[in-house]
Image (cartoon, rainbow, N blue to C red):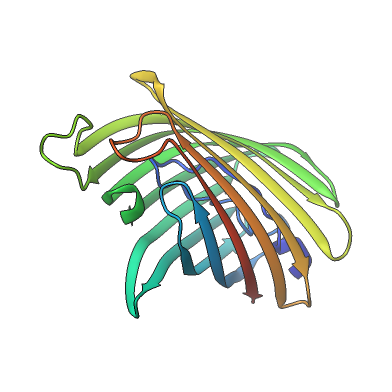
Length: 252
């Protein structure tokens, strides 16, 4: 069971500039009960933020019959001249119902902030469908599409061209892939595309890739690469960020 839980699929999280990959560590289809993970990691960033950071991520899944509810939290901190700063915080909840062998409904909500991207706070809610494209013992792929409403408040000067408070509707889409290379190595990838319904030139793209090395049934080592692109960011914010993570996970 443990080795299957390590499924890492990259996803287009429904967010403006603060995407979250909710595909990470989905529990296997046949699992029932409670499962989760806690991850401690270090980060090297380029783009809008070039810093060394410490991260704490976690997830808790509760699955019963054809219904799954999971919670995700993320916290990012950095240390500068002995002072600690919290740059990012996120809480995500999602409810999934199995409609048929290939189709699932998804309802989700999220709150987060990201100081590196000048986001003081962001709230979103949405609903959509997840479609299983194929699945076998060594690989699987899925496509998801959803409507999402979001509100964001930015830390911007009064004369900024970019709006400080934004409420809008987005179309969130993702394509995910997982491959079991062997008994020790797993590779996962996902791409998200989220245009604004009223203006398709305003869109976000998120790509995540993970190589996971299983050390034991409870511990594993991972290397992650994330690329985030925003077509219309606020002034002073670059369109593209990259983030590389090296981490150790404890699973239960």
